[in-house]
Amino acid sequence: MRYPDSAVARRADHHLLTALRRCGTHPDVAAAARGLSWAGEHGAVWLLAGLAGAGADPARRRAWLRATALVAASHATSMAVKRVVRRPRPDLPGPAPLVRTAGRHSFPSSHAASSAAAAIAFGALLPRGPFPPLAAAICVSRLVVGVHYPTDVAFGALLGGAMARLGRRWALAGVRDD
Image 1 (cartoon, one colour):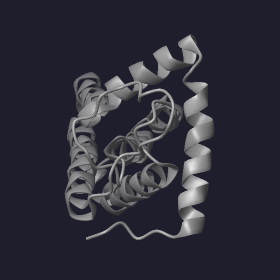
Image 2: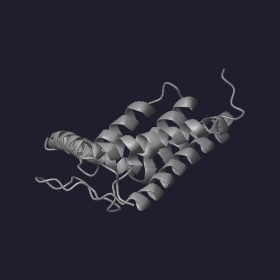
Image 3: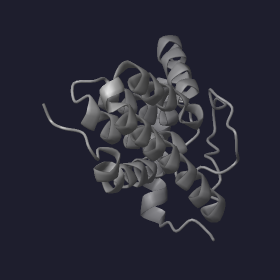
Image 4: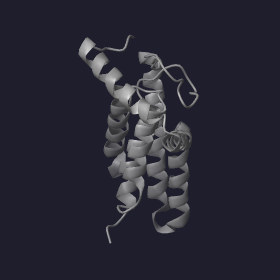
């Protein structure tokens, strides 16, 4: 299956990606973007956060583990979609991407899928936690390092967010609002 796009979407993707990629030429921004991208690889930061939540909150351990399962399922689903769509990663003129990637395909962003799922699923358990800002930073990092188009990140976030919203009732079964 070919990635469905239009000339307008391609131009918008290219311009926005080029602008954000330029931000990565600053050494501090590049270091932060690399670190965030590394932390989000295979949903690692989110899986660890979910397991830490389960360990720190024995009364809601099952809910934390279910929320973590939603994050993992979002990541796995995005990987399956990526294998079907097979959109190549960006190939921009100028500096090489700041990180290596596990695969050649970019749509949707699995970092964005797991990040959005974590922001919603874990945010329901710890509403004042750091999940939404960290999720947003990881999503933007994929553009700054130059390995995803904005539409890859947007669709990944929509996919992960939708999966977490759909599974939220299951994840929170038995949790009381105190």
